[in-house]
Amino acid sequence: MILHLLSTDEIFFTAFGYPMSYLEFFGVVFGLAAVALSAKANIWSWPIGIVNVVLAFFFYYQIQLYPDMFLQVFFFVTNLIGWWRWANPKPEEEDKKKELKVSFMKLPQFLFLSCIGLVGTFFFGYLASNLHQWFPAFFSLPSSFPYADSFILTMSIVTTYLMIQKKIECWALWIIIDVVATVLYFVKGAKFYSIEYFVLTVLAAFGLWYWIKEYRSYP
Image (cartoon, rainbow, N blue to C red; front, side, top):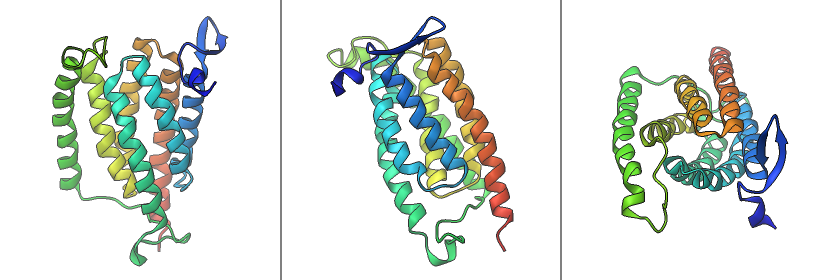
C-alpha cells in the first residue's frame, strides 16, 4: 500500500483537470511546512524537512529530474546536521532560546561560495545530460533541463550550508533558486510543485525580513 502511494500514478484528486498524486500533494505540504518554520527560525523545520525530502526523492525520479533527485539525499543528511547544529550552539552563539543565533557572513566568503555554486552548475549539468547514456539501466530517459536543474542542485547545496549556520544571506539565494524552480516545474508539468515554489519564493522573502529583524533584536 505504501509503495503504491509513492507512485505518481496513484491519483489523490483532480483539480482543474490536473491529476494530483498522493506523492506530489504530501511532498508539497511537508515542504511548505518546513520552509515556513525555517522562516520563523523554528528548529522543527528540520524534522519536517526530512519527511519532505524522502517524498521528493521518489517524485523527482519519476519525472526524470535526476539532479533534484540526488539533491534530496544531500538534504536528508543536512536536515539531520542542521537539526543538531541549531540545537547545540557554542555558548557565544546562543540566542534567548539557547539555540543558534542568526548572523551575517563576510562578503568575500559569500561571493566565493556563490562562484562555487555556478561552477558546480556546469559540472553537474554535464553529468546529468549524459546519465541516460552512461547508465541506461537506471535512467531510461534523458534528464529534463539538466543545467537549470543542476543550478537548483548546486546552489541549494551552498544555500543549505548557509542555513545550517543560520546565515541571513541564505534567504537571498533561496529567492533566486525558488524563482528558477517555479519556472522549471511549471514547464515540466509538475504544476503543484511549481505553485509550491512560488509560495516558497514569498516565504523566502519573509524569511529574509524576519531573520534581519531577529538579528537587530540582539543586544
